[in-house]
Image 1 (cartoon, rainbow, N blue to C red):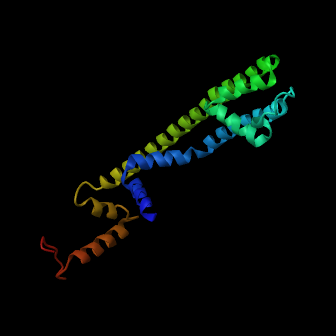
Image 2: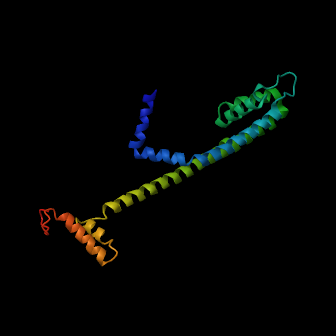
Length: 200
């Protein structure tokens, strides 16, 4: 089983995949907020369905099992949201409740289908894409700033003596500059003869 997680090593090697996962993690909170609104609307319609369709108005038909309790009603509403066979459930309700209830049943299912699957699901997707692209742009900006900083560090010293001159420029006054030069001269004078040549 642990071997299956070795695929995660690709995250460190593939920059695009790492960027994708980082942006996805940064957009989790807004997505959860939008998804909570989606579930709340589904729960409200499930409660309404239990109150409206839990009991059959005719003794010739048994009470619909689909809306006998909240858990089943919520599942049916979720099934309706996914578009999986909800038309068959609605037609079954037409038979159980009779033609006089048909307009109300149609209005209930159509209102739910237009509000939740068509509107709120697209809102969740819009929030996801918006936050994802924001997070991706922030990742790219941070990456560009890091590359720029590394480039500036790499190009700070363009000539061989630039590090030496940069160190000497930090001297606060003339006396400290002289002491820095003497110390540097002493380090370069390997033979300790008071002279510095190319060999040293």
